[in-house]
Length: 353
Image (cartoon, rainbow, N blue to C red):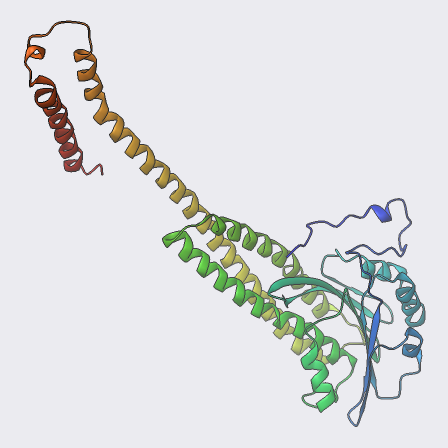
């Protein structure tokens, strides 16, 4: 994962509010637009359509879902905003991919912005999604192609569940629910990685282990930054009296709120576990250092009396015992070995090693 904590906003410096400037990763691929239009009896699906094809009148009792893959083309976003009468400040928020999750209510639409988190090529991808709910349409703005909405598309095609029987607010709920539900496979994978890291810290510590701890801590920071504000989003939606939302929407919204709280609880637990792992890592380093210092201290202590004996018999003095022929190989080395043996036995008795 290569997310930035704060994206650079130098492009917007000095510009007036509502100026349409893209803030995010550089994109080269063109914007692609997919359209679903459906009711209980039938549906129409179009992929890779031109922006002008989205502006045809919506059939009576139908819901149109326009999914925009890529928000780096400001001209496309501006055209969509002009047709659906979307405020320029909302368009500015869509183009700024470092927005905090939030909800805003306008006269003819509700704007929701949140983070979509899922696994892509064995890595965690965090992508901003903007949702605009109108009377009979939903606009979804994604940073790039690839999302977690395939089950919803399949339900529309197969006419399974309630999505084809309900209005646009149910589609908005389904998109929100799909995003939140897909937090849990990522959380499950994160929990497994923490358990593996815990085993490595306790049994087989490696340098890569501490790197994994830092990676996990960084991912949890981004994850919590993405999911925590959703509590405020659901609370704001629960208090709204917009005629775009039906009574059933508020019942489903409680389920989303429960899942968000559950996800936050998991993240808090993971954060505490990683803090404990880091403490264990520091303790293990300290213990290893203590073992090394203990070993060196024992070696030094053993050699202190030996150095003393070598110093005495290394003096340029005539000592009586040195006159004997067997003194050096037997007497001197015998004393040295005896001193070493006595000290080793003493250390073992004290259980110092």
